[in-house]
Image 1: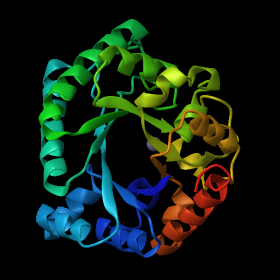
Image 2 (image 1 turned 90 degrees about the horizontal axis):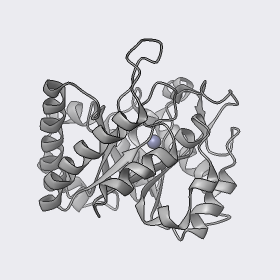
Image 3 (image 1 turned 180 degrees about the horizontal axis):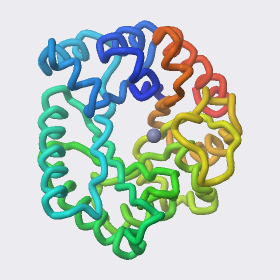
Amino acid sequence: MKLAFNEGTTWESASLQQNLEYCEKYGYDYIEIRAIDQLKDYLKENTLGDLKEYFDTHKIKPLSLNALCFFNNRTKEDEEKVIEEFKEYLEICKKIDCEYICVVPSNIDVTEKGKTLIEEINASCIRVLSHLSDLAKPYGVKIALEFIGIQENTVNTFSQAYNIVKDVNRDNVGLVYDTFQFTGMGSRFEDVTDETAEKIFIFHINDVDGYPVGQMRDTDRVWPGHGVIDLEAHLKRLKELKYDFVASVELFRPEYYQMDPEEVIKKAKETTLEVLEKYYK
Ligand code: ZN
C-alpha cells in the first residue's frame, strides 16, 4: 500500500510548496492537490512546468486534483461552469501527469422545499459523470466520486455512490472510499461487496470524534486511531477485497491548522502507519 497526503490536512497552515517538501522529507509516495485553492496560490508565483519538474526530480508524485465540487443537480448555466472547470483540471492533469480527479456531489438545503428525490439525484449524477468520462478518456484521467457523509449532501452513502458509478459503467469512473464519509451517514460494511472492489479508486483514511450519525463534520476529524471509527474493520475489508493501491490521510481539524505543518505531516504519517501496519506493508 502506498501512502498519500491530502492537502486538506494543512490547508490553512501550509502552501503547496511546503506540503511537497515535507511530504518528500517524510517519505510519502503521493500528494492529493487542492486545485480549488492551494494550487491556485502556487500558480501566482510558479508555473505548472515548475510543478512538473518538482515531481520529475523527487519521489513524491501527484495522485489527484481535489476536487471538482457540486457537479450534479445544478442549473444548466452552473453545470456548464462546472464542465469548464473540469476541462481546466484535465489540462492540469496532462501537464503534471496526474491520474485522478476527485469529484464531490452537491449539497442541498434539507430544511427547504428544495429537497430532491434520490431518483433525480442519481439521474443527474449519471448524466454528468458520463459526460465527464467522455471528456477525460483522451487524457487517460480517472474520475473518483467522493460521497459526502453529511445529511445535506445529495450522495451521502457508500451504496448510493456505488450504484451511481455502477450505472455510469465506465472504466474511468470509480469511487473515493473515505472512512469519515463512510461513518458520517452510517454507510454499511455489508454494502462493500466483492462486486464493488474494482470501483474503489482512492482510499481516504482518518478518524472522528464520537458524535451521532448525521452530526459529524469535517472539523471533527482526528488522527487515524484517535477517534471512534473502527479502522481495523475498514482495513480488513479492503484487504479482503485485495485493494492495495493507496491510503491517503485527509484531516480538516482546526487545532491541527494551528500546529507547525511539518509536525502535522510527520504525525499524520506516524498515526496512519500505526493503524495500517497490521494489514498492509
Ligand atoms: Zn475524503
